[in-house]
Length: 266
Image 1 (cartoon, rainbow, N blue to C red):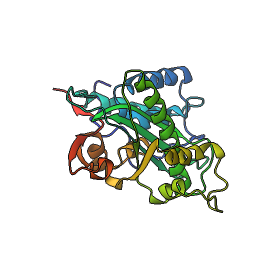
Image 2 (image 1 turned 90 degrees about the vertical axis):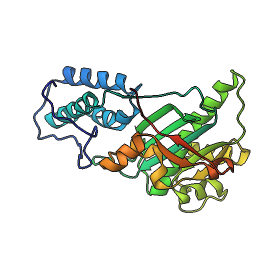
Image 3 (image 1 turned 90 degrees about the horizontal axis):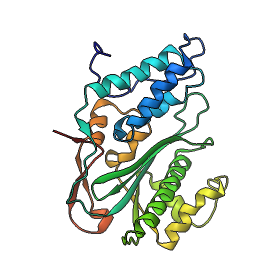
Image 4 (image 1 turned 45 degrees about the vertical axis):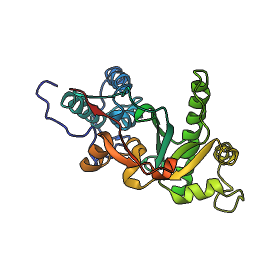
């Protein structure tokens, strides 16, 4: 990696990894070791979460294309080593979550990839990028399932933080799909949603109980988007670095906070 070219993103927007059965096979043990190292780094570098998880899907039968994708992540890390998580001492303890989904993003089985992240004030404390277990028939369904997963994590965090004396009433869950929000708020199962697995409808249940508040957020302010697909450079940097998000819809106040995924540590 000493002479590797600088990479401004961990994965190219045009990257479309698949099984690549005709590609040249590489050492499985070596590739798994590479993925293990990268997964370890995701604990402090959420900006590589999606790229690493995508490469990890091909550990059973890795090819040259998969190894090249993993090497690109290392090149990106090498030239962005000054970036990292930053936790401000003055940050509030306002809990919120973001969820997003890339419908039918997997080229092999057409399953959707969803991402979630949770923040305490301006501090990112939890994030994930996963492929859904079943095929979603619509973007609405994929977004609804993603929101249900984020809701589950938020409720766990709420219970854990209560042990430290922190209390939260209605936790904002920010989703960029108005149709998914409508499904969660509509108690009537109709033809478009009756096939969705029952376990995901606990999102609606906790919304009705007042545990969470489903809030629409503009696409460009959806932090979880970076965990669902490789955005183009401008969008990636905007999501990765600090940026301003209007909180008026979240807490009813006219204010803004700088929040993001990664800060410059110098």
